[in-house]
Length: 112
Image (tube, rainbow, N blue to C red; front, side):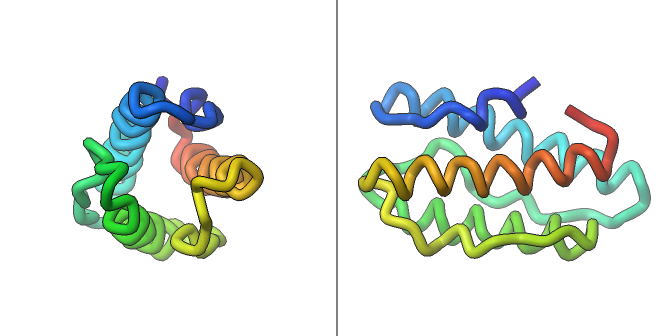
């Protein structure tokens, strides 16, 4: 059950590693559920491991994955590329918005 881990606010490289693995796992579950529901095949983007030295790549790949899932499911998304994740307030807000999209998908697909 990777969804609960997405509420964690990672601060260390080790915490980002755990978060990144759980995050990628959640995307895989969503892709599989969409395919099983007849929604087609979505691209599995390189979301893990997350390179903290080139975080913009992760943000861009992640946004593509979110756009794809939101497009198929008809769910509302946010621009998850515009955040300074070194600022703790912005990081917490980003984690919340990001997790909310995953939660919306899980609810729409009946997965956790």
